[in-house]
Length: 249
Length: 279
Ligand SMILES: Nc1ncnc2c1ncn2[C@@H]1O[C@H](COP(=O)(O)OP(=O)(O)OP(=O)(O)O)[C@@H](O)[C@H]1O
Ligand SMILES: [Mg+2]
Image (tube, rainbow over all chains, first blue to last red; front, side, top):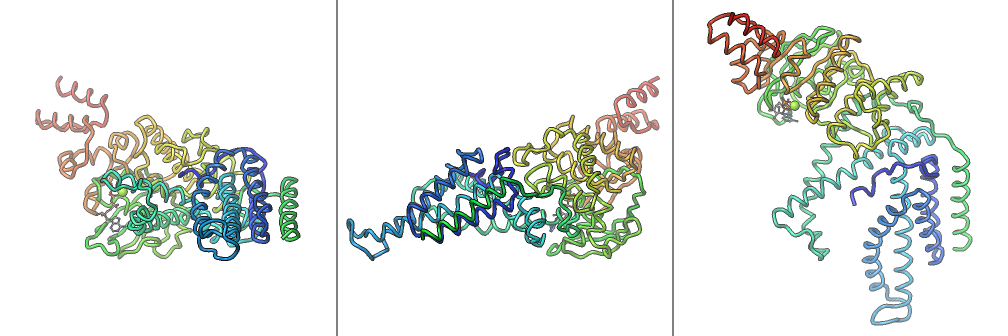
């Protein structure tokens, strides 16, 4: 699970695309998902997400992210289906309206989360930060903070599993199936984890300072982020998605 | 030149001085090794030289650290960093980006190294640390020793006037450690870079460093040429510094036969000395 947010080297179309285009594409997929209420459109978008994973040459990773999200989604689906009271009953207290709403919410969640994870898998955080500064003129400090946050997710997770192993070795059962119980076990770990990761980011920020962080400008980047044919195609596709979703509604 | 005068530093919330009344002058072109037991204040002194103390670490700072005429307390950290390159003890925290190439590019880009020079500098740093083949690898796929080399390479690429390395071979095997020291020696000799290296492997310091400083409990208790410092082995062993066996051998031999014996720093010398006094 810890490698989900990590960069996977490769040479696919998605790897070569300008990071800004990738962010735009992700953004448009999200917009489209929020514009539409049609289950079929959402399913199409989900299919598109998974196709992106295939195009990026990381189908396995895409499906494993999908599986992880699907587990959370199932839980949400059950909650939604139980709580929506409108519509005609299908069985017990579940209504057709409830099922439809739950399906929409859950699909939307999947459609929105997947591309973010995929983009992180095929784009180096430094490229995201640099291109945002170069192309979008985002202030470097913000872009760097974002890059550093993304960079620390895997470290954070590694540390988390390290602590869990240490606790498990002392007889604490983290592998319990009871979600609430597991949550209760994890909660006390949050504070020490947060403190240790804050100290780590602090030291890394110092490492950045002593290598000229404050001198960096939009022109500092050695790599230049140009736009090519792939970017044009992706942009057209992105806009078409939004237009299509708005039109069908 | 680095001139440290009456430097005392105490970390915020700490009850004892981490450094106490340090006086040390490091001339241009030196190769100084700093050695001492855990908690002696080695990392703290390194951070004082690089300006991280007092600019990025809170505490009480007395005395002065002057680098090339710049008082570290009055000079912005960025300006100090142009002069002094620092390799942290904790490599995990030093490395900022997930891919080797980006890590090397970062400082080069920021300090405004001209585009046409960047490739050359990167190639230089990568070849000399022996990690050319790792250029496009992700950091998470590297071993501890390889990460250490990446950290060193990212600073060598910047070619600072002064290079401070805090236990740069902590995760390296003996072979790689020697290569790193040989590289430091080359940088020192060929480019006149001042090298200050904190190191536990005393044999490496004996072989490569020109001078040694021994720290204990926030003080510098000895400073001088390698031979001068090793002349007083019993004092070093008292504070827990592991002395090379040849040096211990020569001092023991001297005591046994009650005769002046010059300190030996390698096996050949010890053999020669032994043959001489034994006749
Ligand atoms: N951030 C800190 N806050 C408070 N005290 C600290 C801090 N860092 C170090 N110290 C204390 O300052 C003293 C010197 O620490 P320093 O890290 O310089 O030792 P060192 O010689 O580098 O040791 P090592 O060989 O373990 O790296 C120690 O007593 C240590 O406990
Ligand atoms: Mg230290």
